[in-house]
Image 1 (cartoon, rainbow, N blue to C red):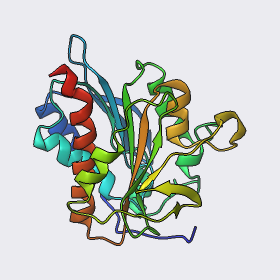
Image 2 (image 1 turned 135 degrees about the vertical axis):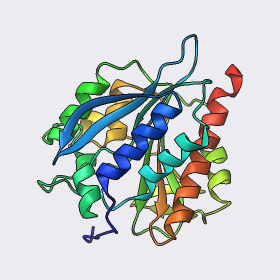
Image 3 (image 1 turned 180 degrees about the horizontal axis):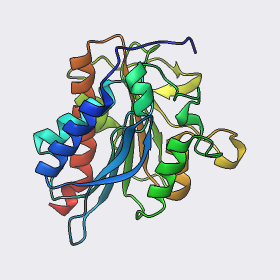
Length: 253
């Protein structure tokens, strides 16, 4: 992939906004490390009683500013309410966000490090994850500098009802859908990639594979095209995430 530099974010200011919005919305701030002087943290809301457990992550690539901003927008909107138990990791690579580049300060792509755990950011994140329950739904939020439309990966080994149609319908209101038959070298149908893979045969694990092996049986990786204006990308992510959330919590309402 060609190296790309995005407009950097201010991780300290973003972390403060996320913490403030989260605490106002009933989330607990859980620090689990630091990188380059910036905090690594989760926001959790552990609502009592039987509720679906939903995990959302963002900010693992520093040249993808829309994902953490989309999670901030969701928190501020009040949409992450008491219908679920929430686990958010909104800023997994703060040093890269400050520089506007993909990798961490050591040049490691964190989203390829969840098998060997070389990066301290990933080790800290995994240590936190090991103390959490399994998730009913996990979504890793990303951007793609090479795509012309919105698309997503679905890891659904138990063939549970797919949330992809709802997510794509919602995203399409503010973002074109990538209808290519091949995306990122994988077969795609209607903007959805459903890779058939054996994790043990893959040398480098993204966060999504680690989550499938250890924490969830249904996960999505969402991708907006970085060529769109930032506001449109944030809106597309927020809309798709809320559609998935709404379908997950609806039986509990």
